[in-house]
Amino acid sequence: MQAPRTRVQRRPVHGVLLLDKPLGISSNNALQKAKWLLRAEKAGHTGTLDPLATGVLPICFGAATKFSQLHLDADKTYETTVRLGVRTSTADAEGEVVETRPVTCTLGQVVEVLDQFMGPIRQVPPMHSALKKDGKALYEYAREGETVEREPRDVVIHELELLEVQLQGEAPFLRLHVKCSKGTYIRTLGEDIGEALGCGGHLVALRRIATGAFDQTQCVTLEGLERMDEAERPVQLKPVDALLDGHTAVTLDTENAGRFLSGLRRRGGWPDTEQVAVYGSQPHALLGTAHVKAGELIPGRLLSPIEIQQILESQP
Image 1: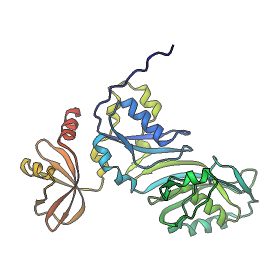
Image 2: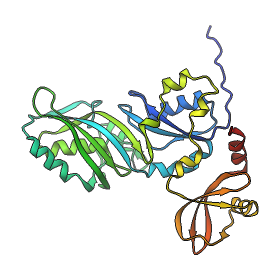
Image 3: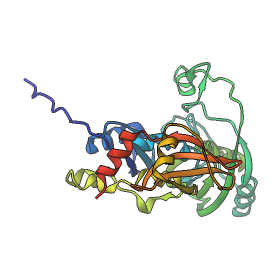
Image 4: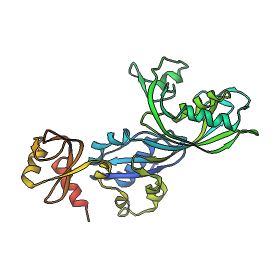
């Protein structure tokens, strides 16, 4: 007879957990584990990492989920290893080998090819991706053995640095540092670099070391969270406004704060700006985001009074 399952009592949790996603599990499984450990009611992440990838995965809890799009749009930084001479069906180590070729390129040719991928480039999204066509994810078509037409996407490679290279031996490889815009597929980048070198290639390792202002030094592991007692875990959360890095701060008095939270525009002497983090003054608390146009503070995403109260009550 099976023992009855223990029901976890959920609670309101607000903030951002910077998780170092481990190898071999999906981003959603990592999120669900962290959500369970914190007994949180609501959580979401800011962009998936493949199961074979590790590294920075910001997880938003409660009110922070309202601003998660800001980090979906943020630049990302990776370290990756491209195995040269072997192409796979998925452009990474999970796929089946579809072609092998000798590696005959020189170090000088590698440097020249990497230069070609700097700046704005166009990528054809991989079939093994969650992008949808006609309401169906591309990976679903791929599992059925079908290849569909994909529109190239414009992305930007801000940095592409060669960290380590081996062009001889049984397993030639490049280890790269890549800083790129949102929507960049590192698997596709590795495969395209291999093609440009005339030998093909696929990813055998991928680690995200930064997303926006968050980097791997700020992260906690799932194992670390598990070892903590229940009181320690919420302390690992960054405040909701950690997602609003680069926003101009505007503080409103009590009357104007109440009207702003009702969705009303406020007038003041603020210069025009697209990204504003709005706070109430008594007590000091995040109210939401806005933008300023022609002296008007125009509400964007707003916290609810209940969320604000819960955040204030959870503070030391």
